[in-house]
Image 1 (cartoon, one colour):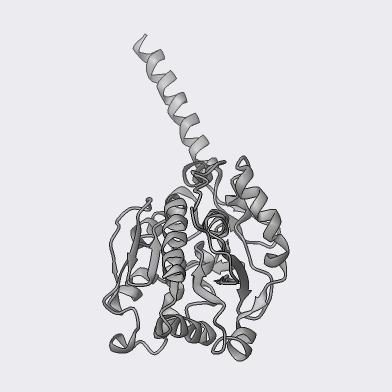
Image 2: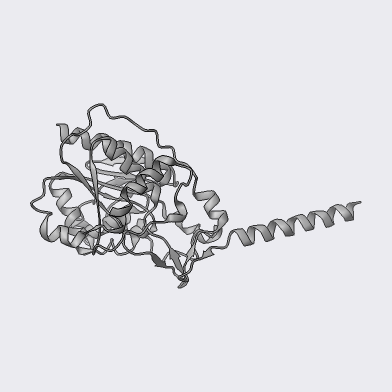
Length: 303
């Protein structure tokens, strides 16, 4: 009897191990990159969101807008050379847009050179009708965005239409944005003209563009506290097959070295506002992040 029980237990453990092994391997894409494994998607994504349809009593009725800066790069080369198929996270894009639109603000989309905004479609909440609807409404803007370079050259300094700069998350925020000189100018423009800056999840990695010289003393966010996706959680990505290898660089530490304090330790619903910088920790924070951003921008506009 004991022998049969042990054999049964061994078979069960073998099946369980095999199931975990195959479901925790990243899934290959047509271009040779990888998206998260089925196991990782089960843990890290959801078919719905907690969007609460907040109604803002006195929405903006003028022409003020928010400039959303997205990545135009798809694949992140990991430390081991494998490529992670990323982009901007759809929940971290769409849910804040819903709140900003409810508050009366249109959102303009730009990428560094005007190439299409890349989106992590594997993270799209397919059962959330509100997210799917706003994605359909903005799909043309994502496919044909404006150019950040053109904005800086022709519109930035003279524009009073924009009240905030918004950088959504997704690992794609670490691609092409942290070293972008045009984003450096836009972040400093927003900071110096007392506009809000919004960044969620990995979006704060793009704030590094304001300190491309590595000088802590001149970094405009030196001394700020933020909510952001933790480096420690990124380190766990390969273990569950979320990423096909270790991160190529660690953005949180670079922000720390420039005087920024990250207040959260988990990838949770933490949101935080320090002066005019509004940040959120993860997709779980997207609803609270959008509400805080919409509320605070309304206050500033109506003042």
